[in-house]
Length: 67
Image 1: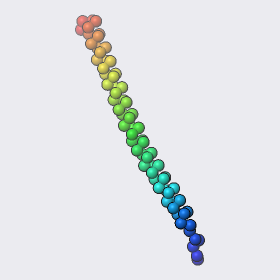
Image 2: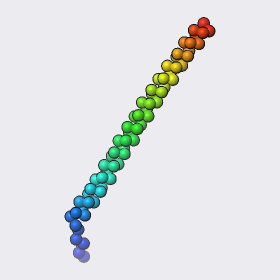
Image 3: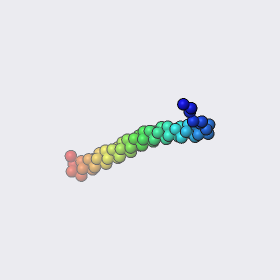
């Protein structure tokens, strides 16, 4: 049984296609990791701001009511 002749350009195109697919998967994983880090940083900043407001409010309450 003879194998069908293979065009060298077709092989190169398939290599490029699969290489692009692999690079897209790697890039997607990197983007997901960076998005996770951005989320945690944003949550930490918001938590710090909330804590600062609570502490400031507590000091004002103590000052107003003489606690």
